[in-house]
Length: 214
Image 1: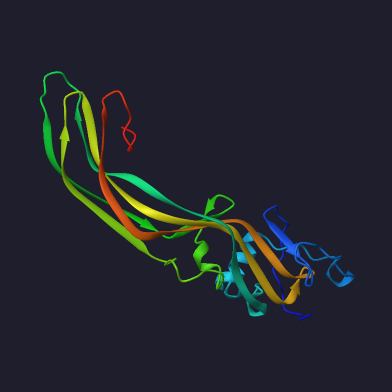
Image 2 (image 1 turned 120 degrees about the vertical axis):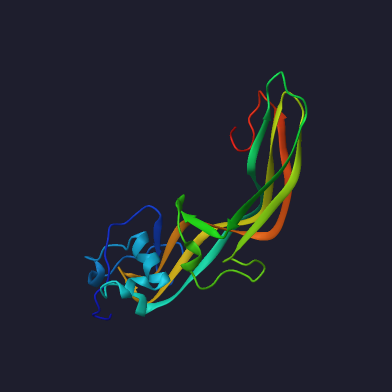
């Protein structure tokens, strides 16, 4: 084992270790590693994105073989958002309102670890196909005339198709870290807009709530 300084930290429930020769089963740690603590999520992600070695020379980046996303499930859904102003016609003394409005919204690639937002897409170097662009932003503009009858309210909307994957990141080291070559960062979610967008309107009775909460 190299004598380079390594990062140490307390074990967390989101990180699991696997033995060098048996995925899913922990082998006994030898006496040489008995005093070593498991790395934290932050330490593993810093090694994956290359910042660990640059922060005081305390990382294991130079011994990192790769960080690979392993998919467990995926889904595609439409994410709708209200854009522009809200037009209300909820007073008894007003007739039909026709008003030209413009609004826009953007969606970007992103992700989370354990439910906390994070720049996950920069952590791994493999495991994703080229089917989607995992590092981009799409914007949709809705410029329309909104028609609001008495007793109703409305706003413009824009929607983007989002592809989401859930899984884990496998972190491979060429030298053992706390007795293991492989560590996992679990409960990882990554998402990206596919590029398909739509526009529409949210038009409801004054007693109901619009998409923007009004």
